[in-house]
Image 1 (tube, rainbow, N blue to C red):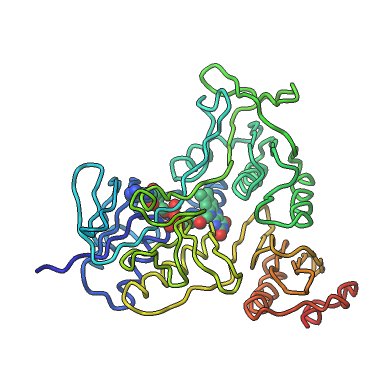
Image 2: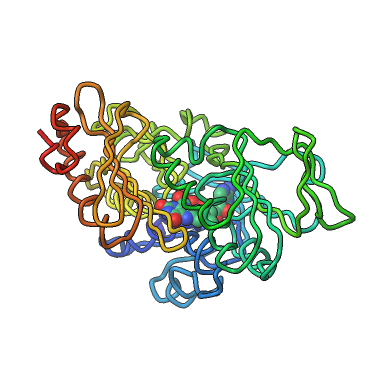
Length: 408
Ligand code: FAD
């Protein structure tokens, strides 16, 4: 009997890295990496940074060239969508009628974009940002003097705003919530970050809801619910993503905010694993299930899932970490800021560090905004302190000179 492949659904970041990790950790059997996009798996972060700034092209973002998959004996099947999973037969069925039986199955289906649901959202010149096609179209429109409306002050919206300012555009950012990046940052950091945008001329408005977009074929105006309107040449929206859990759900796997998995990234079906944006795994460190949407998580979970599909018992319990680049500033966030009620701010060089602690002193997160040179090393150390469940010395908090002395 021929050996069944390890099948990976989702040829994105986590899927591609899991295929590489399977080979690295000794799997010599077949691997099928299945994706519904047209491109070989690519890295998304440069799409909202270097590609918009014109320092990289979108086709330079591939993780590996197509020949690499051939060389590694990985069957990369593109423009193919998995329609359903048959857990009795251990089989995935494709939308085009083909099917494939699996030895192990990894669900790395990522997230899909939330739609912008306002009249005029289908006009030309209105873009989300997730794929090379989106990035190329937006980059081509960022000409000096172009007027850009960004809907949503999340990480992608703010990166687009920063790149557009650097390319000489006039930028408005409209956010329906009262703060920026509300889900992932404490208010103190988002206030500092928005101040940096305003200092560079971005018109950032909170509690600002777009009522409609208008234009003759192409967008030319954004109407706000207040009755005000803004002339524009381009609209980019970043209004969140949702995990692509539909396959797992239809297969009867447990799904909550993502596909539920244990610390081994294994679902309740011992042959099926999940990783990346779609995976909601059990974190002992944070005493809850977490679903993360960031690059480091996609990278590290891919490795852990690959090991565990090969029978290792590698518990994944990393401290979450993400970064964003806006202008010459880097933002780094380690841990879970939302869990800490107290935010302590410290200056390091020309940058700032923010510690998020609980009332009991537990350090839940550490963030930095400024230059990589100032913040990278302390964030690394503070990340270790979070992993070690260190407490913060609340009594030392008012002393501006302390940072690591804060850790009890
Ligand atoms: P994806 O990379 O989205 O891969 C999932 C793949 O599965 C997709 O190709 C999808 O089409 C495919 N798929 C889904 N369902 C099926 C199916 N049924 N059949 C076949 N294929 C299917 N993170 C950071 O930490 N820092 C950053 O600066 C940063 N910048 C970013 C900038 C942009 C523009 C974007 C979009 C994301 C950014 N991220 C950043 C987030 C990071 O890129 C994601 O968290 C990461 O890509 C998630 O990887 P993934 O493999 O889970 O999902």
